[in-house]
Image (cartoon, rainbow, N blue to C red; front, side, top):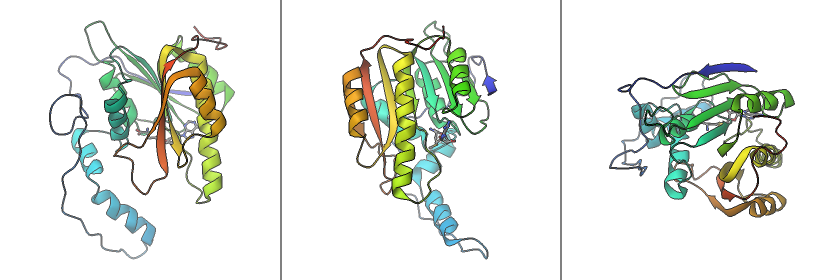
Length: 262
Ligand SMILES: C[S@@+](CC[C@H](N)C(=O)[O-])C[C@H]1O[C@@H](n2cnc3c(N)ncnc32)[C@H](O)[C@@H]1O
């Protein structure tokens, strides 16, 4: 597994973008109605690419992510979920699975105070199949979460319990709904297993699910292991996307079961 970065906290005064949109405090608001951009169909460009480009150009979340220095519009999904459920607490240790290009890591670094100097600093460890550019304060690993060797390395880097496990993992869509669904649920199941191993009592798990919510067996397991389990589709998640998120809070178990870490 490639260890992509282990940047130490930056000096005070270094620019730290906040996902607050307009207005004060922690609230995330992105909106307004930008003028629609038109995309000329270039010779050789597939119409699906043209549609994608048009959607990007007209998406206020894309514009706001660029303005605030976020790697992805997905940053707003985590920020909106956290505005609602308040799981990213100052000083929390976070594992972010399927982290690339890094929007969730950026929000987690900011909200858990990884770069803070007041003693209550958080920690963010991100993992992805893809290589990621360094994010100040985040420890980034490259590898397949489904590979036992990678999982072992992740546990070694973590070297202790986590307060929050995030999983936005998704495979490239095949276009075959049943296959895509099974793949995402498979990733979610392994992420829930991992959360069960590393979470500290009271900890939280946030994972991507597809339409229809969490499969019954998995949902029952989450309800058994966490005090509160809810589904939410943050406003930044596109209406035409089947994704939503399961947010489980108040982990009842004991941390570091069978991890061999620490
Ligand atoms: C929707 S993107 C995540 C976006 C990210 N949350 C952000 O804010 O930038 C899904 C990611 O899951 C990653 N992924 C899918 N399967 C994975 C696996 N088995 N192990 C690690 N990462 C995986 C993909 O490489 C992809 O980068």
